Image 1 (spheres, helix red, strand yellow):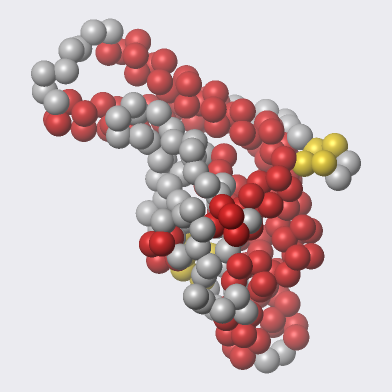
Image 2 (image 1 turned 120 degrees about the horizontal axis):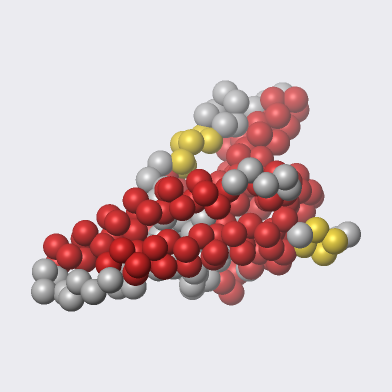
Length: 209
């Protein structure tokens, strides 16, 4: 088991000054919030530790290998996952409960509202991006099963793209809804931080790190 304070101990030894420590933690919190938002809303593949590149001098974070989590059998976006995004015990300990319930949650809500109000034609952008993903899946299926019946291929692909866009926009609107202290983001944060859910994750995901 990885000790839950390992990341916090590393940061405290790396940033001896309170200002540098606070600045790094604040920037890392916002970056992780955006990554978690994108992973959940866009149905992206899970965020493994080896995909995260954290800039030690600024707290900025780059994510590699993120892609749409398309089911190989059906071509639909995979929505069944024990946790919505990465918020492991080490990260929670470093960010602190105040950071998780404050800046991290608020950043997700603010990002969702920016994409919903006013409307920046997000659906049109998603259709242009997702059509490539669906076409790649279709060609892969054709290569694996050349005898698959053709049928109304164009209509089928358009339907699949539309269904994926509707699923993404549904999640986006849910996160953008904010009524006082009640928010869908708070529910997702609780699910991502739950030990009962983390223990169901693939060990390669490193649920405690």
